[in-house]
Length: 529
Image (tube, rainbow, N blue to C red; front, top):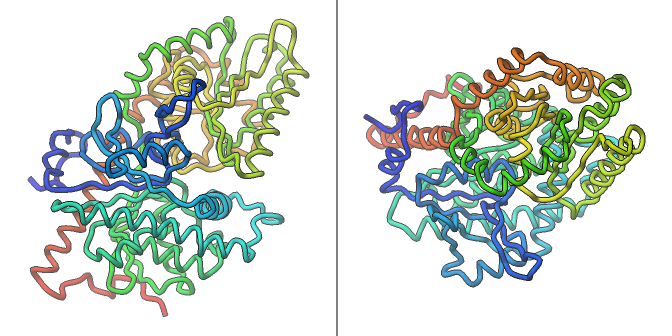
């Protein structure tokens, strides 16, 4: 049986390893699966990389002997990489399965690529979060950062990938990740025109009218870079449709779009556009939840709640997560429902994020101020209604997802949102998940969650009360529905779908070689002039 005919429900890591015996998997992302920092004693220690990309890819690659290329983000990353043979580290340390390799960009180059372009221009663009009145202003500094930062680091990644491609006799399969590397495939393609490349976008993809806020030269280069891939992956069918719509815009790229086949042709290259929702590794997550550090944090949480109901949020401190409106909704809930005073605690376990940027520092300060205000307004000697921790602590987050009575996940918009899926699988208390309709995960989980409009603070306050007062039978049924919706999908299956898509491209190429000139008929496309 051909690889792309295997049943996704029954495919095993062994079958994947068998298929990959003559393949070489190369993954590239800005943030890798490990980050090195100094502990309080001055020793360099590895820490798990944060974010959904790391969560999904780390578990997916356990079936491969892949290399994962990422940027050195700390001084310690550069030190460890410099001391490693070939700048390669075997990961994870406790049971090595794949290699990590760091690219080491210049400090100013990385600032322009990461802070000025990726996080201040592309990220808010893809999340519909431009402050149209004030930000961004695309001035000479932004163009300079695009030319000398974003392009430069994408080339640096491409160079390392090309080195890996040329280091092996196996067939390379390249998997690029997210908005940091939109241009990378074009640079790889110039030097390795036949290599199979897949790019997955972990954030939403916007509609054409919003993409037009990006200056035309950048928009053209971005779309050309993406269409240098063989396959583009998105979380949802909606994002696929948005991308296809953007490719119909003749002013940026002169592309032809086949909506039925979900394919785009630019010049003589065809790119398939697919959707597969990212998910989690249930078994690995359960093993993590059984670790002593998690058990210790669970005991700490029970002590914190002191018999009260526990509302939890686990998020990074970033604008799209909508943390301020979550706190505002909780404040409104307390104001409207005095009977719940001293009976509930809202524990916010947050990760610091992008503190080099003023916007993120201001957001962190506003969150701290609002939490303090709520405690001052409603708290008593015996009760602090809001508990806030902002630190990088994964074991604490897993414990919180085990223990919540209510989990608040109200992003303005999210590509997927794995916290909602992790909470559905991990929770032991038939906890209720309040989930924004702007999260990509909502379409999968909608039968097992309470939906909220992320901008509607009053509706969210009502949802908090409804979740806390929900009967045991209803809670159990909703928790089961959410858990089962997540269990039908895994990060392993998500990765297998991408490999199958590349195999489809490979077979199309093989057939084209057997029948020269046999390409999909152009009339099937919407041709633009």
